[in-house]
Every structure is written in C-alpha cells, then in structure tokens.
Image 1 (cartoon, one colour):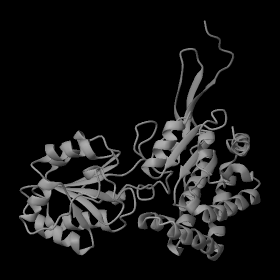
Image 2 (tube, rainbow, N blue to C red):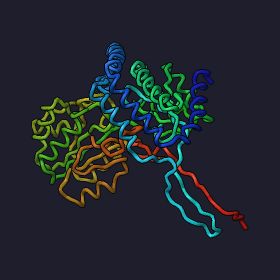
Image 3 (cartoon, rainbow, N blue to C red):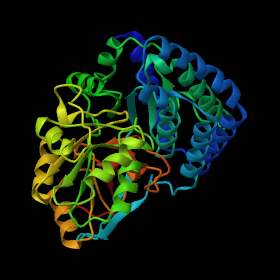
Image 4 (cartoon, rainbow, N blue to C red):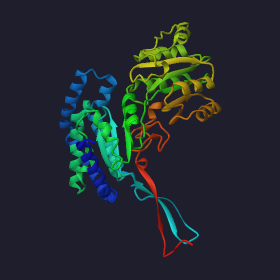
Length: 419
C-alpha cells in the first residue's frame, strides 16, 4: 500500500470521529466562511484555473471538458451560493427517522448517522471540490478528493480555502483532503483502503468509472454516463417540443443531463421543422442507414454515427442521435437497449401515454413535458450534489445531503432484560 495514500486515509478516519460529533452551528460557520473566502479570492482562483485551462488546451481536452473545467465568476458565485444553501439546510445527523416502544418497554429509535469517510474520484469539474466537500462536512463525513491532473491547480486552491475555513472554526483541516499526486495508479491503492474509507464515488468518463469499479474493494456508487433520450409522441405540441429539445441538447451540451438521442413518432407532422430548428442551433443529427433515408425523404440532412456505439454514444457536444419510432412501446424498447438509465423525457398531451412511459422505464429520473436538464441537485432543491447516481444502491439520481448518511438504531431502557 502506498504510504502517501495510507497517510491521507488514516487522517480522514481520525478526523471522521471529530466530525460526527461536530455541532451544526460549527459546521454551518465553516460553510459561511468558505463562501466568503471563495468570493474574496476569486481573482486568484481564476489565475490558478487559467493554468489548468492552458494545460487542458495543450493536451487537446474536449470542449465539453473545458467547459466543465472553467471557473468563471458565475461558477465561483454558484459554488459560494451552494455552500450557503447547504448551511441553511437542516442537519441530517441525528435526525429521527422513526421510533416506537417495544413490548419490553425499551424505546427504539432509528437515526441518521454519517457514513464516515467518503472518497470522490472525478475529472475536470473543480466546482465538485467545493460541492462535495461542503456536503460531506454538513453530513459529518470526512472527504478525500482526487481530481484529475487537468484541474490540479484549481483544486489545490479550492482545498486551501476550504481548509482555512475549517481551521478558523476549530475543526481539523484534514476534514477535506486533496490527493495532489495525479498518478492514476494511486487510485488502486485508494480504493483498497477498506479499514478507513466507507464509500467510493467515481464521477467522470466511462473509462474512469470502469477503472474504479474493477479495482475497488470498497462499496461504490457510480455516477455513470448520461445517454439521455427525448421521445416526442404524435400528439405533442410543436412549440413545446421545439423548446424542450433545444434546451435539453443545446443549452449546455457537455453535461450528463443533456439529451443525446431524439425519438420521434412517425406520425408526428412537425419532424422536418423541428430538425431545421435544431440544426439552426448548430446541432448535427446522426442515425443509422434507415434513419438517414427516412429523414432524407423529408429534406433533412442526417449524418452517419461517429463511432460503433451508435445510439448508445454520449456525445457531450452539439451532436445528437435521431430516429423515427412506430409507437411508445418502440420508444421504450429503444431506451432500454441504448440508454444509460440516467434521464428520459416524453413530450405528449396524453396523460395515459405519459404514465405508461413513466411506468415502463427504470431510469433515475423521467420527465414529462420538460427538459432533462432539470436533473440536477440544485434544480431539485438539494443545494448541490455529489453527482447523479445511475445505479440502484443506495441512492439514485442527485446524491445530496441525506444520501451521505446511513441509519442506526438507538435503544433506551430502564433496566429491561431479554427473557
């Protein structure tokens, strides 16, 4: 086991005992101090971030990753606001979920309690450093953060500010630690620290998530790719469909809740007009040979797929899969075959069709007549998120404050013994 990783894991385990007992007032004070430091140091943050962006361009990082990497004034303000929102939430630690008195007279309560130590492995997004650190702190957990080498200068600065806020409020700086060595081999050691770490969360590209999942001896909550699909029923209103599709694809194409595939009922009369509106936003449409022929007959230009993944490709760019389907059942079959169980949407005026779509799919979130871009912790009222979990244990969708806790029982008696 690598000595550097072991030391970080041991530090996290030690301070987790302090954090699980920390008062709500002290945790909130740290988060308010953090928000203030983020705003006061924005210029230095942007300077460090510029170093990362220059390196990312040098190595040819994709535009979607550059977008996620950039710390603009808007992103810095968003991080500060997220810290304040998390401070304003009720503290989940110690929350009584249920309770009753047993036949023996013992009073039994089920309570929320911190997980302990959470390790997050992620790429590009330096805002995750603040979001996850803040969520872990408020939920009483120690955080070990391992960002990518493309964001190392930004992450160092952000953790420095976070640790300064912790120390100012008499909490240990090691509550939030950054693995500054970016050798991927160290991840293997990290995910084998079974005595210190309670949960591993990989958040990034498919290769990273697969790597972590294959090597981890610790429970993993995957935040996998988003092959999100929109299905337009034959009765859908054109204006609504147009606005939703363009927002879901083009507003910010490099994020996991952006739409990657569009399914259109073959009897919907506005397909050509919609495709023209989508193309006007700079979106290139892709399909198989059947789809290319079908849209060509309408005067719509559709390109072949960019790779062998076809409809299962997560573009994270101004590209989108498209095809006609015969009915709702065909749309569902397509999603079950090619989707990633992240986000799906239906646009329809038919309540029964919408309910059938909801019932037939087991994706983390299903949207009716609204954009998949709403699948986000902030939009869902969680303040921030660790990520969007696409698995089924122990959380699905945006992983927020309460999802960083587990349950335990507390039994209170007056001398009762079991007969």
